[in-house]
Image (cartoon, rainbow, N blue to C red; front, side, top):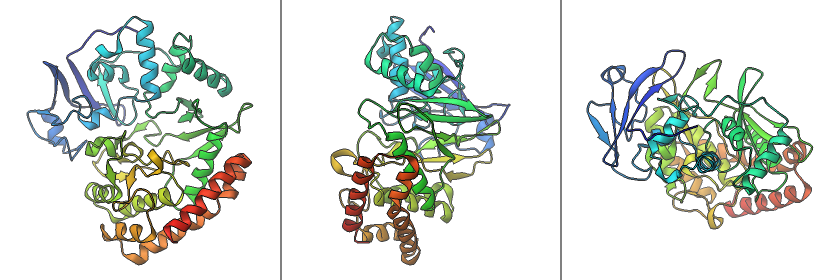
Length: 400
């Protein structure tokens, strides 16, 4: 792998075998500009309606939250583990990662990012290695986490698939489907994968739309949590946009209220059913003590007709969030949102109180079954009891 600084990169939508040219990004005097192609403007497809309107001429991002990139392009960049791997590889090659512009990093993403956006010219990181036992990959993850000079960087980089998120993960193709499999970080409990799988089962019972998931076997832990990618289906790709990228909301600090998320969902999808799905997810996050509900943990999908919908729910697990509060507030409350906060939230997008109460009760019933899901997933007794105690405290504080 070699990097030569680049000043122009071309963007396309790759729904199927025929990529649709979207426009080009250019770096000029340390400023990034974007311009749609005339044909793409005629298509009427809006890849980021709130921040990157479909119009002629060059456009500049008004803020520098994403180093001058519009959020829709920043969504394609790996962060957390994926960025660590790339930066580690660059240092091994004697390249200072700080010298790369966002356009250089998009070249690395190329055709292998999440969603349907692709970038040319791309830089190949090599062929994906032969799939091996997940326990062996977990050992490699640990080695790379602990040693800057670890020999497995190339292999893990090729398997990362430009995925985002803090926890180590790989993207693999199994039985003609694309899967994303997570590994524990140094600060995670040994049963972190089992806990997330139990939460997946609980969310499914609560009526959330969730991707297909399973716990991959291990001799080192209860298992590795994996989900089938929902931006890929039968060789087709779907455009994906995180809430962070859509609204230019910082996911590193608490910056949103669920009221904003629901209103954005309503405006984007123009579908009350999608807004209700988002409300149900909000209720689940509150009642299940998933307080890592930051702006990158909500996404939307756009098909080739330009129709938007809420993505399946992901990254659902037990989390206490920053200083014990939700990353996303509920009508201004982050520490102890109550039943009334949730009802008021629903009313802001014309979900009536009776419907909201029904959703809350359905979710609470699923959450009350935590011990069953935990036992099915192989969660340790210590974790099961700790989560159960917290969920009961949440139920009491929400006054449900």
